[in-house]
Image (cartoon, rainbow over all chains, first blue to last red; front, side):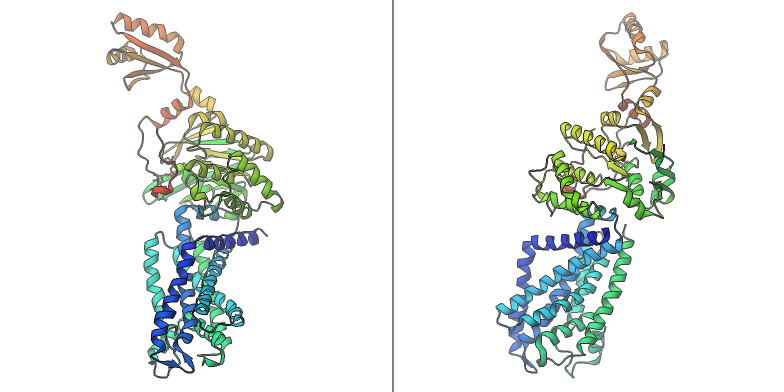
Length: 253
Length: 329
Ligand SMILES: Nc1ncnc2c1ncn2[C@@H]1O[C@H](COP(=O)(O)OP(=O)(O)OP(=O)(O)O)[C@@H](O)[C@H]1O
Ligand SMILES: [Mg+2]
């Protein structure tokens, strides 16, 4: 009972802090806007993917990108909490480290999914075809994608003291994961070299983006693998990362 | 009396530095136990270990009967702490911080609101309770942290310089409340402070710590008695000559010059005064003023820890994060 309340308290804190950060919310409209408008429009006239125009194709990929970047970035809250001392208040509380980790992780994931929701809004504003049913189907998939990614961010942050070094590590991880996920170009294209396809297979985001495309684009999309395979891989990835993250939190000073 | 805290050769090293050195103390149930010592003595390190946020390098301790290493969770269920360094979430309001604490520490939902209203009133923050804490003054943040420490009633409450930077009225207020709470809920309190008068008034027993070791431990009155005497302060036109007169001719060894004032510690100050004046007059030394006072805890503290002010060697603070950290000694 205490654990459950602790979990809820920590979850609520992350969500409240997200809504109070107006600058972040406003700026989170801007990046996907750039990607979809400038990048998306530019490539739209350079090629067609099946029956899809590039902008439609790109849209789920940009959701994947937003989920990746925000999820990983969430680790920063751990460093803030250490720096501002609030972490001590949490660590001496009579709740287990598992609960502390899960509360923070699910809270941060909720924030990341809200960020993903903003992409749907931006897409709708840009006139890309978005339907509400697809959004609600995408919700649990977005959560599944973020759990593991947020866990990575939290794990890294639990080992670090400074914001700067966290930022450096971030850019080392984020861009490769993004470029190798099929967010920007279809991995189904037969002329993609084997090495690229192989590396992408090891990237959890590849499965996330593919799942999102299957849900959002429907028939028009030729998936890499069946939806249930994508979901199973994501689930396995989440479980492993959550275990590692819990371990990292247990040994945090 | 039951022992609520007991340490067994509790030791903590930071690289080469031994911050806490083979500490053996025990605190009894219902007591207010003062831990005094100069900056860097190891007080906070000791408390951090007792609160399970820092692992001992060697040795161990029991809090409320539970081992701080092997039964950390049980220990955490028994304690409350007000940290020396800031530990609030300053993006949340004061009230939100209190509710988070109540929930994390398992205060029954039905009692949360009334307890929180009570402590907010105590620290006079009712008006500001719904403001984001970033807009609070340093003292207000401190008051909220104190209030937070008082909403779940733990078995042992650690207060690490709780009243640092607070005005005298607030301090008085809070101490009255803490004593009430202690009586009503059988709470044992471990307190560190640099306000000697506060320690003197409040503590049942006081341990003076320096370089990670306890160098004196007793009730405040017993500690003052061990000083063996009263303090005589003399201002004279020729302090050096008077000092040598007092130490050599009169045999009062415990004398020194401090800021141009001669300070003598003697057993029976009242009967010594006329003899000192007489000796001075005979040697043509003019006494400007002379005073006599019974020793206070500050004298005890200085007696055991020496006079020199030590550089604040405690952890580096992060600029604006530190609230009212710098203390004028
Ligand atoms: N995390 C740390 N890393 C390295 N040294 C530390 C650390 N924490 C404390 N110390 C050192 O341990 C010693 C004891 O510090 P501690 O904070 O326990 O002192 P204190 O008695 O609480 O002093 P103060 O009155 O200034 O609060 C100091 O020399 C300090 O520099
Ligand atoms: Mg301290």
